[in-house]
Length: 448
Image 1: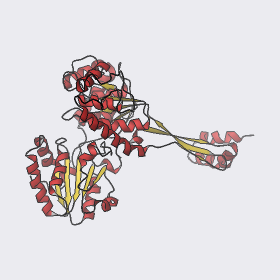
Image 2: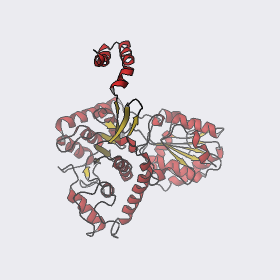
Image 3: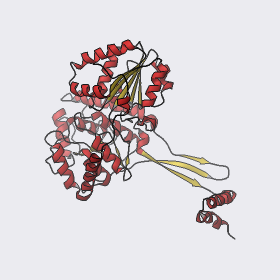
Image 4: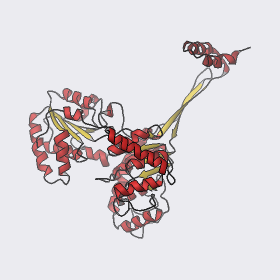
């Protein structure tokens, strides 16, 4: 398969909804705000086939799922223990059902926790000789919604990527929104990951109506302080529209990967990594930037060979046709110039000495160094977060982290002598701005 030889189509890739989509999402949000649970049930039935009345996953549903997967030996909780991956279930000691998947979930969560622990921030204070004290208070958000996609792929990994940093930040209430799959049931994988992370408040709704419910609340759903997690165009549009009523992590668009490679790169690996990103959806972007023309030809041949046995081949072909590219440059420095201009969500560096090139990275969501660090490693198991800035927003956005689940308050204390020393300057500054009441607030404290 021949890739495009320029990146103009990729740079012009549409990431925002058109006016009709925005209007539709606005109408949904208004409907949910007005009609609450009734509107949620109506949309869930229309788009996801939901026929139930209880939007929340009940405790007995969780218990039934765990017993079916792991047998009666599993402990039956009413709620999982927050922050304890094993919850109240004796799963790791049970050889039945999906035990190995739970082991993998647990391992992934531990990796994520190990990485994100380093992001925990503490309050601080500064005490000056004149008695002035100032500082910053770091406090966790109270209630956060995790949006977990459940369309063409059930992104269980996204649940872990969102829940673990939130727990490390100290968020007390974590709630999951995810659409049902079959028979009004949330997928087994989501239930296992949620219970493993100690998140027992799960709602069977997805789409923009779920975003509206999280932002504004309904009869049965308490509103949140922040919504995190990726979604399709309608979900992203809804997040954009409710921002201000709640906080959001970022305005995410279609996924992308950029691979920088030299003549030492293995075309089999390059092709596989481009394909892995292109399978997300038909709007995904996969770009190779290299100093080796032969590598482009060999990579294209490998893409065709590997496509023959991949299940999502049609999606991949459409993605690569529209938003795949192979760019030939003269130097590795030029390759990084191209990459920094695009600001990719995922950046792979497949060069002879990839670590030495890390200082050349200015704009990228997550960087993968060397042929033994493929991008899917970051999606699942390395510990770095996979909720990343897309569409070039790595120029100013960062990966999801513990810092996304806290807020900061600054404080100061001035004794009278310290205020007196600075009072005239404050008053003069205020008067220069035409705000004499501000100046008066200081002056009045020293009137005789």
